[in-house]
Image (cartoon, rainbow, N blue to C red):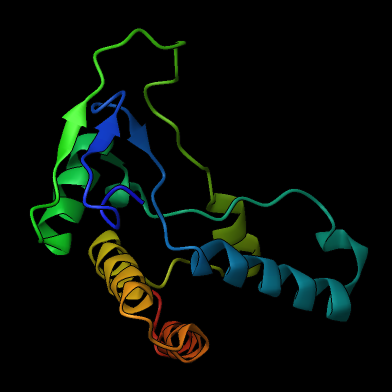
Length: 147
């Protein structure tokens, strides 16, 4: 939102690491689970994690720097120097169960994900038909092979 409003993005913890991923990644995992529940039954009715590959775990600073570059238009960020409640430094999802039991793997890496996020938001700002944009994004995602 800050980029859309030509404001600096305020960052609390630039060195925190988070499991960054495109929204279509976990959705595709849930669809795989739904298919397996339908075809194979209750043995798949348990908790599942769907997340990025380990090499895509990056700091908030890394992500915001990439987004600033991709966004252009004088986008920038600023460190919030205020005291905030403690947050975990490294958040990670263990997706090994989904990888092994469902054959699920992320399709898009971090670079692709960030580029698509910026492209989608800029299309929205330009007033493009977001149903068409979103359908194209889903089609592109489904056509991608897992890395």
